[in-house]
Length: 363
Ligand SMILES: Cc1ncc(COP(=O)(O)O)c(C=O)c1O
Image (cartoon, rainbow, N blue to C red; front, side, top):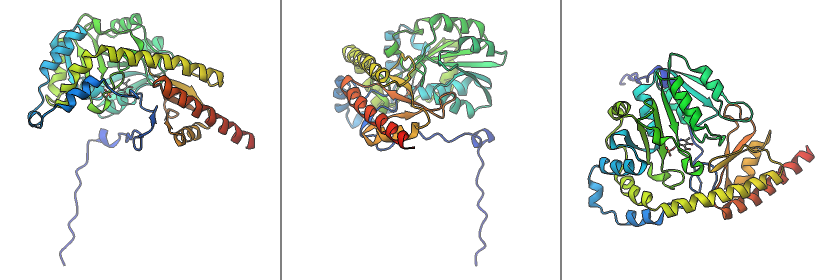
């Protein structure tokens, strides 16, 4: 009998072995998706027209990023060599961290999960600065946590899941107080807030700004984002960024998405109107909420948060339980869609809260 051979498995780096698995709760999302802060409706019809015309021949070629980068740069008022298109903001975070991290990453928490995920694959100490119960941007605590070892300070502005914002003055002060570090301002939800620091790119040397096409533009499935910063930093980012990570379908769709400002503005206005209506529903129901500058709102459900999310899901409304985020026990994040969608969500909310209260009465 042949002797069984010992199988040798190559071990990954210790850092990778220590990483937590990250499984976003996708699957069976063919319903009202108020769980991932996406556009809940559609992208511009102009994007679909372009997609329909893409030829088989066009798919045989490697994607060429530079011409579209130049177009986006001109729109945003930055130079073409100050910008890189990426496979979503997630790739922007990944390559920025690959290029620069080590030492310390400074993060206000709770915040977007992927900063910590990508940092944990590098030799970096994550310094998490907890926001107070009001979940406002913890500006003073962040300033106090800057050390000579701080390499990157990452701020989502507006932040997820809280919806809170940092002011332009606070961002400038952070950049001034950490001149040896990069300050990443992730403006994924910019369109719902309307304030940006992208005009400071190149002027504030350590500022990096990220934007996504996954949210207001409704192109999450195409994976399209960008990173902007001074040329001296962007040239290192480009060393680790694949020249082909933004595929040709995404590149073809970007110009019509940018051009159709009327559609983008309509969608943003619709969401903001829906947020006002839905916040009134939450207030009337006595549900605590945090002020939001984005297309979502964080609410306090309490001990029965999982049951609430399950009840809402059984009524066709998907929400995101954020209870395991730091300082967020019992809290659930609700994406804001159109007014019509949110009226449907409001009915489901009333019924679910009613069911929870009735259960509570029996307990
Ligand atoms: C703050 C923030 N940044 C980035 C992203 C991801 O963007 P993208 O889809 O472009 O990778 C998200 C998604 O939820 C987010 O909340």
